[in-house]
Length: 194
Image 1 (cartoon, rainbow, N blue to C red):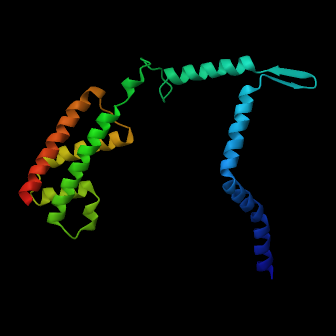
Image 2 (image 1 turned 90 degrees about the horizontal axis):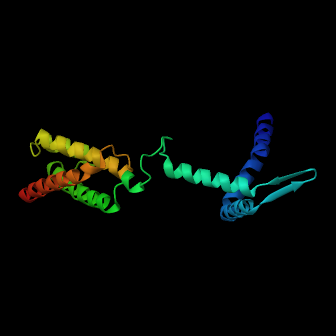
Image 3 (image 1 turned 120 degrees about the horizontal axis):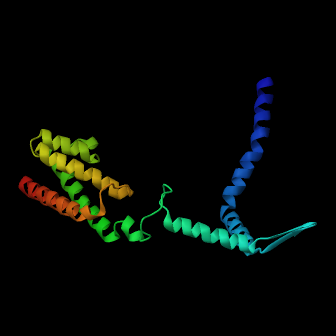
C-alpha cells in the first residue's frame, strides 16, 4: 500500500503544473494577444500615481526608446560600433545567394548521380556530399585536386547557407565563377558517364 500512496502523492503534486501547461498551450494565441495589449498599454502610460507618489514615464520611455534605436543601428552583434551605418555592407544580396544555392543544387545532383553509378546500392552515399566525393576520388573519376576544390567550395557554400561566411564580400563574384566552372566540369563528367 505504501507504493500506491507514494504514486498518488506524486500525481497530486504534478497535477497542477500539468493543468497549467495544458491551459497555456490551449490559450497561447489569446495569451499572446493579451501580452501584446498589455505592452501596448504600457507604452501609452504617461503617468502612474499611487497614494503619496507620482511617476511620469513619457519622457523616460521616449528617451530610452531613442537610445535603444541608436544602439541597434550603430552596433554590431558583438557590441562593437560599426564603421558605416550602411546595412548593405554587411550582407550578400538575395540574388547572389540564390544563384549560389541554385548552382550548388546542380553540383550536388551531378555528384550524387556519379556516385550512384559507382555504388548504386549505398544509401549512406546518397545524402553525404563528402562521402560521395571520396568515393569518386577512390574510383578515379575525380582527381584529388578537383575533390579538394569541391570540398573547399562546399565549406563556403555551407557558411553562406547559414549566414556565417568569413570571406570578404568582394570575393563572392570569384566564388560564383569558380563553382560555375566546377559545375561545368561535373556536367561534362555526367555526359561522359552516359
